[in-house]
Amino acid sequence: MKNNTTKISILYEDNHILVAVKPAGILSQEDAGGDPDMLSLLKEYIRINEHKKGDAFLGLVHRLDRPVSGLMVFAKTSKAASRLSDQIRRRSMRRDYVALCHGMPDFETGVFVDYLTRKPKQGNVRLADEEDGVRAELSYKLLVRDYELDQSLLLIRLDTGRRHQIRVQLALRGMPVLGDYRYSKMTTADREMASPALHAAGLGLSHPTKKDEMYFFSSPLINDSFVSVSTDKLQQALTEAGNQGFIPKESDFLQEIVKEI
Image (cartoon, rainbow, N blue to C red; front, side, top):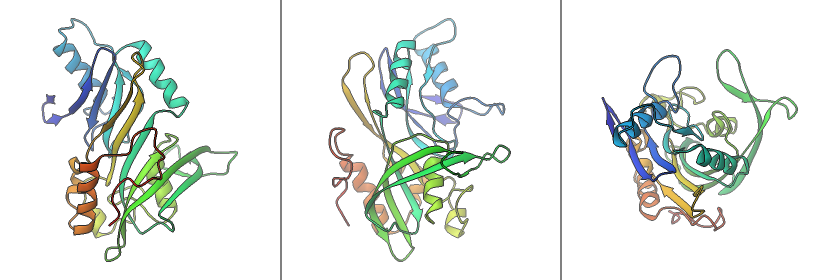
């Protein structure tokens, strides 16, 4: 679909759900600024496509940070919204990200657990004590290292969905996402990127009415921050991730996903 200069790819749609790819820089939901947002654009698409006279119902099930690109699922009925939200609460909805970051993790696979809180005025998220913060957990797999540039490409499984979670948890370990103006070192490489090199590449869910297990993949190469990566190793890893897709939902996350380079 196209609205003015905003292009949104719709990967799947039926009477109950809609799965689309959010471009970097687009809001998930309307704010006071009035900039384009996914929910409003897709509501208008449904209204026109289905010839509805009034506003179309579309439920926002989860969000992506504005500068982050990738997959989002929306509910077209209140029943679907309730059941998809329940999957998020039970952590059965699978959300996989690809991130290009400074530095390198100590291990090829691992789990990060932190307690985070938000600074009210700035909107930034910071580390907190267990009693003062919310639990944030993710799993990661190292796809490739670039020793020359001191950069890593990671595949990340999001276990909880906190504000700025991946960006903050990587930055806390000295591995900020490239191009992240809030949490990165803002090196020359960061400033050359239009948005953070973070993309919601995989989304797995149980269909709210059919109960079918569904998995969707969006190549990170739709994000200009990944397209701008020039080193052969990182580009090869991104291409292979796009070509091979991800492991099935029932498989263990830490099995080989992309051929080691």
